Length: 176
Image (cartoon, rainbow, N blue to C red; front, side, top):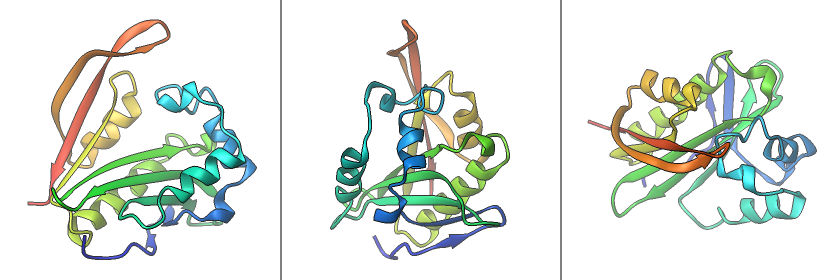
């Protein structure tokens, strides 16, 4: 990977590396909120400060990114993003969680996604960005499609949600 991630600014959000000070009660609360995690495998875990600090530590010394999504107007934490980079293949699997529900539907997630994925494709040394989600996560599907990603595959009836099998949809975007 070529460039080092420091900070990206948009009109609505600022993206910066997630640090120890970001392991807040609000962040831990997002991870334990069944509405926030309803389409994530985080819904099967209970998080506390120690589990969150261990997750943050897992990024040390790696090319992977753990990103804090902040409101550009007041600096409030509104979510997180991850970018798992594989330098051997030039790929980077990206994920996002807007945990502060007041920000849902306001374009914050889209701007954050576009900022980080744009940077990864232009300066981050990535040739392909894969991402995926459960098919009923319509907001995430729209976000990926609006960002220029295309459906690559569907894993039929792959995970159980509310007692019923659901598809996982896999999207991707190439640098060229």
